[in-house]
Length: 167
Ligand SMILES: NC(=O)c1ccc[n+]([C@@H]2O[C@H](COP(=O)([O-])OP(=O)(O)OC[C@H]3O[C@@H](n4cnc5c(N)ncnc54)[C@H](OP(=O)(O)O)[C@@H]3O)[C@@H](O)[C@H]2O)c1
Image (cartoon, rainbow, N blue to C red):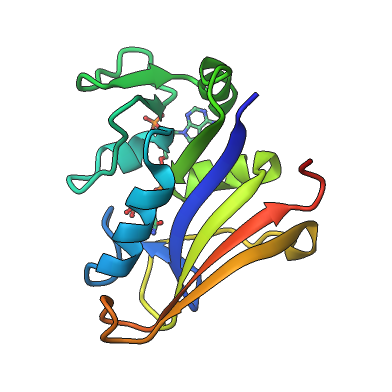
């Protein structure tokens, strides 16, 4: 089975989205990090995140989770009816990325081996939030700090969490 990784950016009040978009201005340093860590890896996303005009996708394969039976997706994407089905389809991969949004993060956190979390050090109005999770189950194995102006309009921290029970 692949390593199951979640990747997300959240504000100090855990906001991740507003009106099916990000709550903040583009953060190039975060985007660069996302491109680097997800390169060559398949991605799994909820139907609402797929519906986002600024959606993120992988060149090597993408799964869209929906309860709709007749949902049609563009080429390069495949519809699945559950997170587990998407993970099974990635059985031959070394690592797969769960992109969100909130509903899918809630399902994925119990299965996550790694979390790549960008903390945006501001408070934003949001309508979707990154769920709280038991941080004691994870080690922070990497932490990168960027000050506002360092390729980001806001101060951010990029943290990598690794589940303690992961061999
Ligand atoms: N900051 C970040 O890192 C980040 C990352 C990703 C997304 N976002 C933001 O998050 C927001 C979207 O999050 P969201 O929670 O509203 O939506 P979402 O998680 O992207 O998608 C929710 C959809 O997934 C499907 N779904 C959920 N649970 C399911 C289950 N158990 N079985 C089958 N299908 C299931 C349903 O699709 P159907 O309704 O089609 O059945 C549901 O409407 C947007 O604002 C986006 O910009 C932020």
